[in-house]
Every structure is written in C-alpha cells, then in structure tokens.
Length: 222
Ligand code: HEM
Image 1 (cartoon, protein in one colour):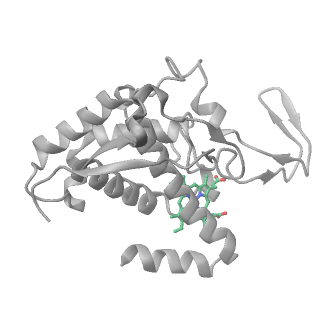
Image 2 (cartoon, rainbow, N blue to C red):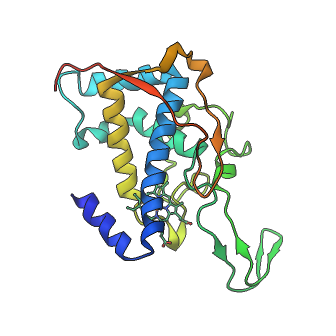
C-alpha cells in the first residue's frame, strides 16, 4: 500500500508514460536478469536457498522483516545491478556552463550521458568484471544508494531515482520469495551453461529474449 501511494505521487509529479516505464520496466527487467543469472549459476542459486532455509526454514513464506537477515540475497541483487543496470545511461544531463572534467572540456549546453553499464564492468574497479560473483559484495559497504560511484544503477546526486529505497526493497522481497518458494529449471532440459544471456541495449537494458523458466514448489506451506 505504501508503495502504491508513493508510486501515484511520483506519477502525478511527472509525465505519466515516462514514470510508468521507469517504474515498471526497471524493476521487472532486474528481476528477470537476477533469475536468469541464478539459473545460469546454479551453485549461487543453491547457496541463496540454503541461506533462506537456515534463516527462515521451509514452513512459511518470506516476510519483509526477514530481509535484513539475508546478506547473500542482497549481494545477488547488487551483483545483478552491477552487470545489468536497467537504465544503462541514466537520464541525460546538460552542462549549464563550461566545465573542466578530469582534463576534458565539457562545453556549456552539451548533453552528458553517464554510462553506468560501463562503470559496473570497469576492470580498474572490479576483479573479473564479467563474472557474476555476488561474494564480492559480502563484507563490503558498497551500496546502490548513490554514495558509491562505482555502482550507480539508480544514479546519484539530486536527480537520483526517488524510488531507490522502495524499488530496492520491492526487488529484495520479490526475488527472495521466488527463490525461497520455488526450485527453478530451464524449459526443455536446457543446461545451465546454455542459458540465454544476450542483452538488448536501449533506454532500458533488457534481455534480448524473454526468460522462460519453470517454477517447482519447494516449501511446505500455502
Ligand atoms: C530497479 C528499479 C529502478 C531502477 C534501477 C531505477 C533507476 C533510475 C535511474 C537510473 C534514474 C535516473 C537517475 C539519474 O539520472 O541520476 C531514475 C529516475 C527516476 N525514477 Fe527510477 N528506477 C527504478 C525504479 C523506479 C520506480 C519503482 C519508480 C516509481 C515508483 C521510479 C521512478 C523514477 C522517477 C520519477 C525518476 C525521475 C527522477 C528525476 O528526474 O528527478 N523508479 N530511476
């Protein structure tokens, strides 16, 4: 309910179509990429389920209060954002005046795009940048709230996504519920290493082809 009110306020405050696209595509694309990465890396999926089984057990579904006790889940979501930021070029900026930026002159009026996708894969910052490896975030304070410029899927500064806290929490709850409640397999016996991971670059970064995955119940309730 709180999420719904927040969303309506945001929609009122800007162009409806843009707000709805920003709010829904980004979240659903991230969720789809996270499940695709877990199917592609089954040991990471097993570890996530192991964490949830230890903390919550298999007798009830996950609730929002459980999320704070699932560090591996948080690491998986950060790693998904690092490799697949749903808004890869953030929103465009325009220079208000001539600026000297790290030796580059940005003239007044120039449109500036920040490539969050490339920043997330920069080998000067990340070991094995192409590898999906959530463990890199365990014991690290790097977060997606706009303070750590190596990971900015929600942008940073005064135009940072106003829904950062809400969207992140919603994603945590959705992914945790899907991973805890269901075992997942690929259709037609496709092997994990053959999971289709091709992306399509646009205003939002999406999977080139939709993920088809089969859920199988794994908890003893509902
Ligand atoms: C995974 C989820 C989401 C991601 C990764 C995301 C990412 C972003 C990014 C990168 C920006 C531009 C920030 C910048 O350029 O510095 C943005 C802006 C915005 N987002 Fe999100 N977003 C998400 C979910 C949502 C949701 C759920 C809503 C609405 C409920 C929302 C509403 C907005 C709005 C209204 C803006 C424009 C803010 C402005 O220009 O001042 N976003 N978002």
